[in-house]
Image 1 (cartoon, helix red, strand yellow):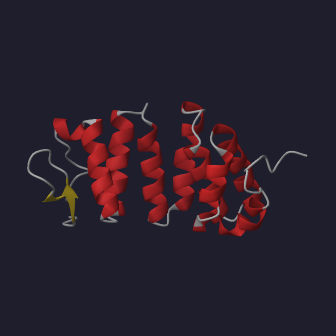
Image 2: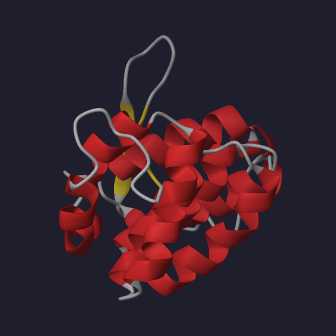
Length: 167
């Protein structure tokens, strides 16, 4: 049983700490509310309790599959546990669900880069650039250790961002 506790924000009483053991087996009706799951995930992520984070994110995807955050949280938590292949595979279906997202292809780029497939990582990064602000994404990528093996290519973009894939 997991006895690690995460601070859970409470509206009127300030943060409290509650044990989260057995979360995957029993979630009370109010606890399956997407807002509650989001808050609990954030509290556990702050505490770096990734095992519980995976359970919370899975519950969030089940309760609200239309929310991008559940998909991203689940993959991020798996990656934090060193289960990067599982994170990548679990996030792939979200590409079709959220075609305008920049975060999903960015995270896929990070995961596939960590898995040693830089050309695929660049393709996912290109999709992130197309969906969002290329300069902001470039600056983020240049500070992301998951993309370190691509920093030279990313650095060639220049200060305005631009499209590094344009010929």
